[in-house]
Image 1 (tube, one colour):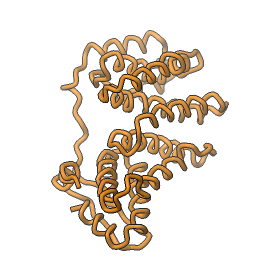
Image 2 (image 1 turned 120 degrees about the vertical axis):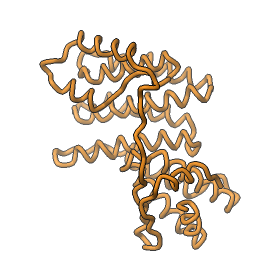
Image 3 (image 1 turned 180 degrees about the horizontal axis):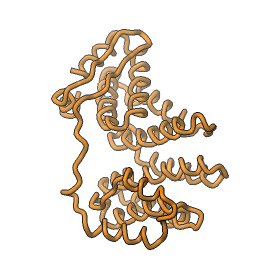
Length: 277
């Protein structure tokens, strides 16, 4: 079982190996969003194990996870033509991982609000179009996933803070004249979701969106409004089918060469979710 193998690895030398585990899980989660929920739950279980083992609520494992996220999220973007796709993927992957770490309780919910404020500041400071697009995508990612997390938590002060950020700052950006229609469309979808208690009842197929909106000669405000209206009326949660997960890509601790985990079948993946330390 994956978690037991990693725990055995930790017990060999906890102080040294928790760093290796944190680095490996961070890297996998950031680069492999299909299994990010699994990696996040595994991170939470390992953090709980280390807390019990050390009788310390502030583990080095947790600090290392946070540091790995900070190194990418707060780093100044240096985009060149040959690396822009990788930089965008790493930045969005890090943003996504931060959200999931909040969901599993490794990070506080306030971190999500702080990240949004940071993105707004960075967006205002840069004049480079590619950088602005990365920050816009990250804002949408946080709104879409963190918004639901905040609502389900029933923490009134966080809900009010998020609503204030949306109404006072974010709306102004996404409703601006210089924003591309694809971002207006995605933001309007999230706005509709927000006013529906953050429930996923709106059709949201990113590939279809990009394909449709990639043809500039077909884009205008009327098309956007019609597509949004038809999606809201015509789709329900039952029509949305989740992606099937057949295997988990391997986690490899290459620093010491001690543990190499092969791809896992679906029954093993379920165990990762069900077992807790």
